[in-house]
Amino acid sequence: MAFTLPALPYAFDALEPHIDAQTMQIHHGKHHQAYVDNLNKAIAGTPNENKSLEELVENAGSISPAVRNNGGGHWNHTFFWHTLSANAGGSPSGKLADAINKTFGSFDEFKTKFTAAGTGRFGSGWVWLIVKPNGNLDITSTPNQDNPLMDVAETKGVPILGVDVWEHAYYLKYQNKRPDYLAAIWNVINWKKVEERF
Ligand code: MN3
Image 1: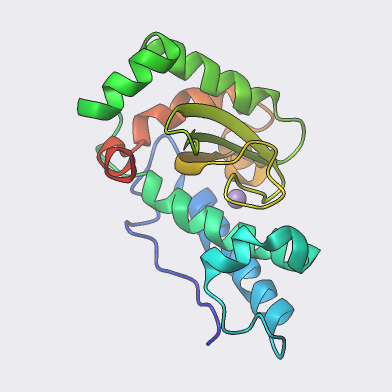
Image 2 (image 1 turned 135 degrees about the horizontal axis):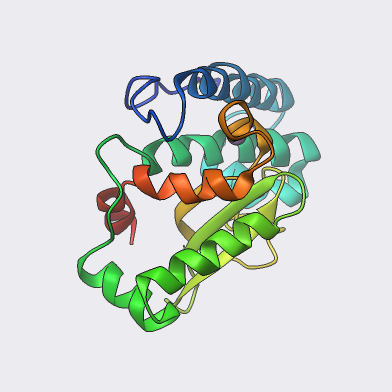
């Protein structure tokens, strides 16, 4: 059972002007597709062939660098597409809003800390809002295609929000200005989905 590239849950231009259509086309059709293809190559004919993506990701560190990079890439991007949507943005409500206020002081403080973690990630990686094993929220960042579910993660937890800070996620529109991309991303965060995950 080979993995396949999931369809984007919206049109390539749905996130304009914050994320441009060409970036979405390349990001989904080329980058995400490559993670799927290389994950399939890495597990073909091995005992890992029939494992779920979650199982592969959780044990990535002990399986292989190829599964860590490409299994992570497939999981992270699938999660990312559903974290975003058109006509989104605003702020979280209900229990998630309460938890964010309690943990970070306010929604604005949360955004400042999340942006700092994403800006501070040297090179390629991701920034996450996670629920830790003790139930508390936390912000963490991972290198490359690692994520907080992995056995190799420094800070473990269940992601409810994740933002790709690889240059391929923003370079065409924002060039080297990662902070501008991270400022714009709040306009397309699907808080209903994040609340659901929480
Ligand atoms: Mn990416």
